Image 1 (cartoon, rainbow, N blue to C red):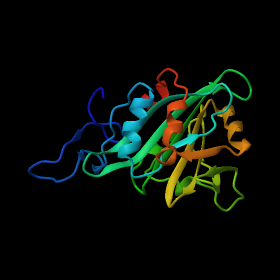
Image 2: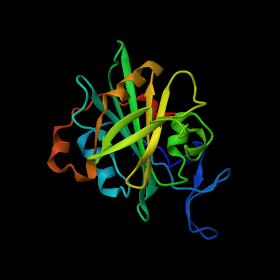
Image 3: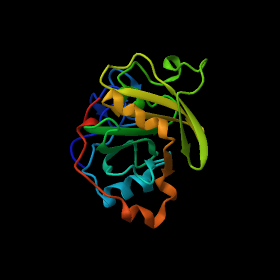
Length: 213
């Protein structure tokens, strides 16, 4: 891996457990699960994260036509395992041009999804219009999963969030019009259950979206 772990909420530096604290610490956010550096997309790198993860590693499967796996990060360490994962995919947008999709699974309070969404976190609940019908649906681990659009995000993206397997699931897409992809009821597979199918995953270049908030 390249670089040092950072805060999943703000990207700032974190201090490793030591004499005065038994957890990773951010000067701004206190105790956090450290965000590990992104690695170039490959089946080998994906397998490492999948084995560490204690939350789903969501991937659209099959991928939309022309789309590629373009990066992964996780928040957590070797002691506690991955408590949040973010998988990037890139491909042709529904209205032309290139689109990017970031799927985040995380425990309550980790804050990685909110960082990529560009909102104050750590969780999407206050920004979701759950008083309205769901704005999109996916099939996550074989179950219909409603997603609501997240409000207050930057204009360059569309963000959807919901709950799957008792954890937050975020879908963040760039540019905003690529959000049309979410109305096709994508099938999301937890790669922890994928087995040898991971070897068939087409890989592209590392997405810049997964490197920054």
